[in-house]
Image (cartoon, rainbow, N blue to C red; front, side, top):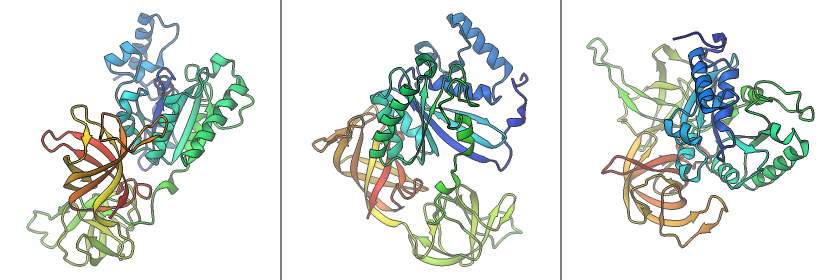
Length: 432
């Protein structure tokens, strides 16, 4: 492998903070160019990659190095000049590691955007300064709000094509801010940029002296995400029960999984669901040794002082702070299946944290138009990429929270039992 374009001082260091962010925008707003610029400016691409992009750009007749080619890896994407599937890109600076979910802008790929944004700490929405806010911009803002993404950045791109007109930027910023206020949108930042030329991407540009905010990369490096984690409600879904096979270790019984929320410490009193039995944490183990505490999203093994029958799908929580033990679920779902619509009476598997159960659709309350926010209460089914509020009944209880309180224990997927396809992603509104 050839030498990196820039020195690898930005290589991810162990223990560095990690920010996951998703990009969204209408067609030709410049998402792929922006991501290519971020990869280029943070020295994350290799010389052979850059040479390949330069060669393809020249062959296409581009007068510049088309950095969008770094991300539009599928042949169909390059031919059409659009992004089709979710692509995950990785880069790092000395301050933070990043995972980008590059999501499509087309309305027919709503399910792809939901997939990419469901685990994001931040959503980055691009708008073409020449076009202003379009229907897609509002739709993407709504979806990020629905998915409870904590931070939102609006990048007003292609400012060079409007001569860095401050009034254009302010008009778009004001219009988007007013719309976002209706969605109960969280932290919002607006940045004027030119992804093609790199203005206000890695550093402040002198072409926008009227803009007093940070560059995009500076904001991504410094946005505060530690407090976004729920450190109050202890939720530890058990993924695997560890019983060593060695004959020299006979009394070890640990429960492995990923901390969904809260903080676990040895000596803490805990309750195991669904049994309701209580015990005390004896130790928290990892491959590197025992820990004094565990918090999200750490993967650990918890040992208890008492012998309790615990298996995959059970949950460790606090005695006085437990999730709902529920079989009746109300949720918003995004339908992802092309072959069949979602309809009342249909049966699926529901995958929620580490528990899988059978479920039946009890009702469709309304189908939501994500462009107008209109609720169609006469709808009888959901087609591909449509979103609606539904009622489900599960064969065994789920240990669930509201999605707005906990994105891990409030989210689920529906699976077609015959084909094993994931057909929907859901966000729990009520569990009883």
